[in-house]
Length: 111
Ligand SMILES: [Zn+2]
Image (tube, rainbow, N blue to C red; front, top):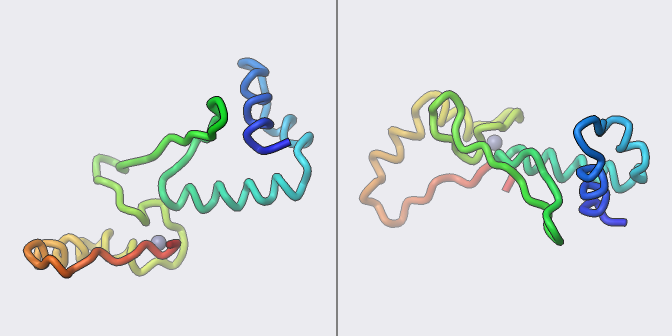
């Protein structure tokens, strides 16, 4: 069974379902792989996965406390990119380069 099918089965269990109980039915290897996927998704703001038909869809966090998000908003690594956003340095650099067609925003650390 694929993780999509487990999610789908879990979703059909109604309001009193418990992921902590349900997850014990999922093979350890698959659960570990899914955990790794979720960590990577979360770095990009994607949370709350659910099965919809043949796909798994996520919600995405697009801002925190009214500050528009960036690709490292949820980064908990030692992340230079996030530091530059947090300090406002990136905004300054973006402003300077707004008419520079060859400037590209740095890649997120997880890319
Ligand atoms: Zn980062």
